[in-house]
Length: 307
Image (cartoon, rainbow, N blue to C red):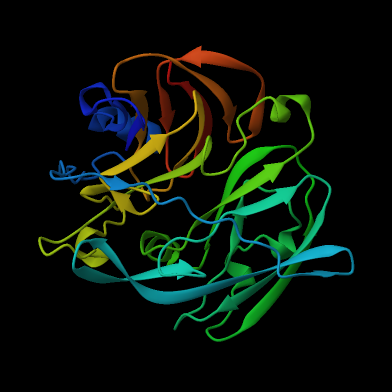
């Protein structure tokens, strides 16, 4: 994904690179010794604007709890111009809207399963009772709805939601069932960070997906029980993505949404940035670094200065 100021020439564009670790390091971190790795295809041609998932608005208030509806369904997505491929998504064709909850509030979520097989919704990183955690024992049959109610009991954090369906979790996530879940609180640290969603507070889900020569995804050809890799990097479902910044500081909420690949995130010009958050939420104090390594499912929050 490229990150640039609107006024900068293309030659001065800063690039946020998802660089692959050597296979040896990957195997050591992931415990996948001998797993084959599919190389990444370097895309040519024009960049495309980064898609920023919309925030899901509450569709009502019930007994003091805000109510949301998530619908898991099948659709088609045009990753490359003129080529549509079958995908899965929440409230859309691929991925899902961003959920924003506040610490201390009660929320009620209705999950509608409009797939042809069962699924679940797991709140990855969230402190919730086991009955609503979306593990395989919480499976929702095809065509059925499930209502989940819980109180948000944690401080500010970047989390995500996805299925944890028995035997098909990898396939369902790979085909598109995933989305951001942002916890907000009233702390001084939260207040001091960029927070205009989609402007200076930008979620970026990085995923590798395997595409055939005609531009369609192909999970079956990529599948490997030791780890499924892709040959194209997507940012929020966008290949060759570019985000045009309009502010001096940009907060990036990075998510490794890949099934098996590990990434080392750096800035193209080698400059440093501030890391302000990890899987567990915001840090007590930011620290300066020039790289962030994320394994599948991990998140990090960084603040980049475009001065």
